[in-house]
Length: 97
Image (cartoon, rainbow, N blue to C red; front, side, top):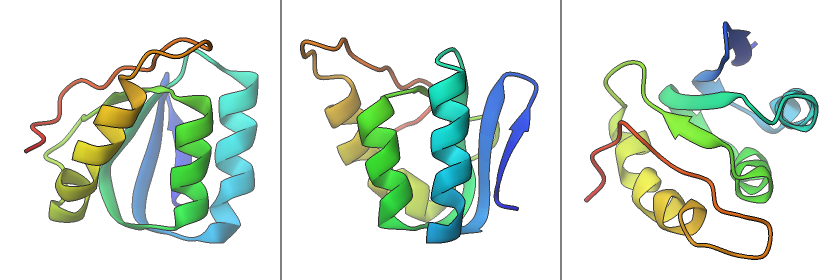
């Protein structure tokens, strides 16, 4: 399983395929307070990215992010930090360029 809950952090690690989207959505629906750490992911299916864009969780990096995560976080950080009628998510711990 590449999507797992560790304490209050939802960790995405390794190759996160489409089969993990139900797990991710279930966690995000039931626990709005969860932090999400993508730093251990080497590949993330677009379905998971879409779920993250819908739920707009707070993003953190517990470890040094992978190159893939660093490159994609820039766009996701911009999107999540935009205000809208539903509020804005936040990203911390990433150095996005």
